[in-house]
Amino acid sequence: MSFSIDGKTAIVTGAANGIGLAIARHFVEQGANVVFADMDENRLKKEIEDIAEQQNVTHFAGDLRERLTIANLLSATVDAFDQIDILVNASRQVMPTDAFNHKDSSVETLFEQNVLTALRLSQAIAKRMKQQVEVRGDECIGTIVNLSSLAARRAQPELLGYSVSTAALDQLTRSLALAYAGSGIRVNAVAFASLMSASLQATLKENPEMRKDIEDHTPIGWIASANEIVDTVQYLASDASRFVTGQVVTVDGGRGLLDAVSAPAH
Image 1 (cartoon, helix red, strand yellow):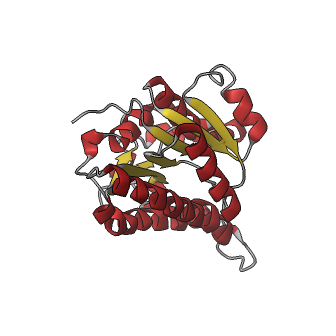
Image 2 (cartoon, rainbow, N blue to C red):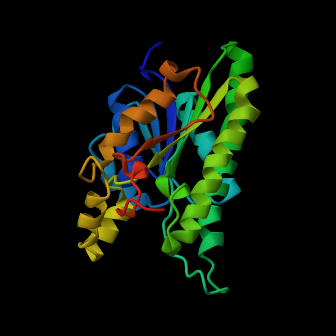
Image 3 (cartoon, rainbow, N blue to C red):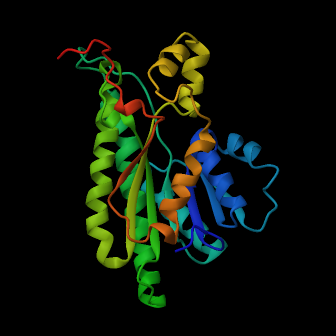
C-alpha cells in the first residue's frame, strides 16, 4: 500500500497556525489538493501567501461551530476540487478550568469547540464521502483524522475541561469508526503532547519556566516541532493505513509512559 496522498483532496481545519498549518502545508508538498480552513481569515491569508497561487491550494474562513459555515465549506471544497477524500479536524481550543467555580463555562466552551464541531463536520463530510463511494465503487474512499491530546488520558486539574473534551473526542473517533466502516470511511486520531502547538507556544511565552518541566517529563528530552506529527497524519490519511480504523495513535516523545511521581512507591 502507498503512503501517497498525491491528487487526493483534503480539508484541514485550524490551518492558520501551529499543528493544523504544518499538516496542511505538508499535504500540499505531498501533492494533495488542500483546503486551509480557519476562522482567522487575516492570519490564514498571511500564512499561505507564498503558496496561495498554486492550483492545489485554496482557503476558507469561517466559524465552523455554525452549521451553515460547515455547509459552505463543503460546497466550496467540491466547487474547487470536485471531491473530498480526507478531513483533518485540527481545530482545537485550550483553556483552564476552575473546578470549584460552578459558573465556569470552560467545559461547555471546549466541548463545543473540540467535540461537537468535529462531530458535525465529520457527519457532513462523511455523507459526501459516502456518495462518492456509491458513485466510484471503491472499497475505502474517505479518511477522517482527529487531533486529540495526551490530556485525554493524563488528567490535570487546571485543564479539566480540555481533558474531558479530548477524552470525548477519542471516544467519538472510535464510535464514528464503527458507524462509518461499512461505508468505506475510516476514522482515526492522533493524540499528541510535547509538540510546539500554537497554544503551547503562547503558554511558554508567558511562562518560560514551564519548558524545563515539559522537557524533564518527556523521555526523549525535548519539545518537538509541529512538523513531527505530519507524517503520522499522512499515514492515517493514506492507503497505507487502509485496514486501520478507530485507533488513537500517540505522538508524545514517550511522555505518556512516564509516571509523574519519581518515587518508586504506590
